[in-house]
Length: 402
Ligand SMILES: *Cc1c(COP(=O)(O)O)cnc(C)c1O
Image 1 (spheres, rainbow, N blue to C red):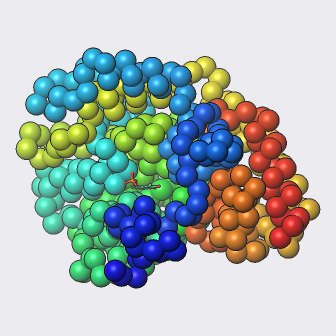
Image 2 (spheres, helix red, strand yellow):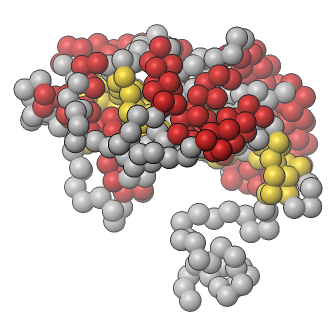
Image 3 (spheres, rainbow, N blue to C red):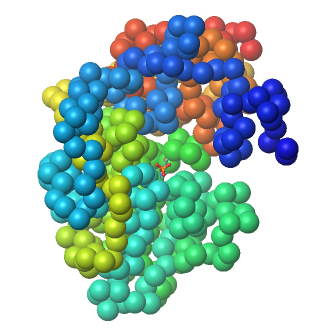
């Protein structure tokens, strides 16, 4: 018996055997999903504008993804990378064809994609005769995952406390502070990591000129630039990759969330020079890029790369942002501004964002929370106009009653 005994009591609470590190609302259990909606046992429909935190990029149970998964499941699930995996080779070929990258490593999650990138940055510097270059600079309000190195990369003291002794080889500077970044670079610096659109710390697209300056600093000092597009990548921003919004390209990039559409996958993409030192024995993953994950990843790519999809995201996003701005005009003492790009949107609240989130959930609209007192709106990329309108009307009603 401990502090994690909740509401219904330790013996009967079905959550009791799980670590107490999450706090899902007790009474709400979803049994089925379809498109932008989730359904409870009783058949109550909720509009899902959280999408499993930008993961179910084409909603729930999309027929193309279901058939990719089930067809692959009937053929072959898993081989390990001891053998060639044709679906993984195909996924890699396609991602390389549409990105800055020359090759990639397949993992199971965003954190693992980030970890692979951190190793590749250090491995590259060592291979170029700079083994002392091991330190990586990150930015305030960042999030890169929950492994030890990913926590250290983001430098969020609240997440690191009790878990990370020392700095683990990372330095940190304030977001978009060029002078601080410049003076943080020294003879031990190997690279810089950032989210082109910050997600967890508040929805925050990076300033284009700042990003151009970061790229320039990297080139001047022989540093590698890594983008964490785990959340903002794969169409979420209205471009295939968020950095395309700014016209600045990385040497290393992590993808995950949206690429699996709900199936666990992570990818670390790199240039040829960064990939070259990652020879046999330097890195690996048992599950990474297995047949099931690769088959689903390919199917998600089919949908994202479909003609007009990204334009459609931009058009619908414009419509949605305008409607949100009208809500701000109508309820200025409740919400104050809209942030983000495409369908990675944050609404900064005047009221506590957690209260708005719960009030919206009570009216069957699911949203996320983010730092800086924002709620996070991450509808599926293929959400319908009707569902966007419905979300606005639920928000209008909720804000009116608060
Ligand atoms: C979610 C997230 C991660 C971590 O991904 P996991 O799949 O949870 O390991 C890393 N970086 C960013 C920007 C994220 O949003």
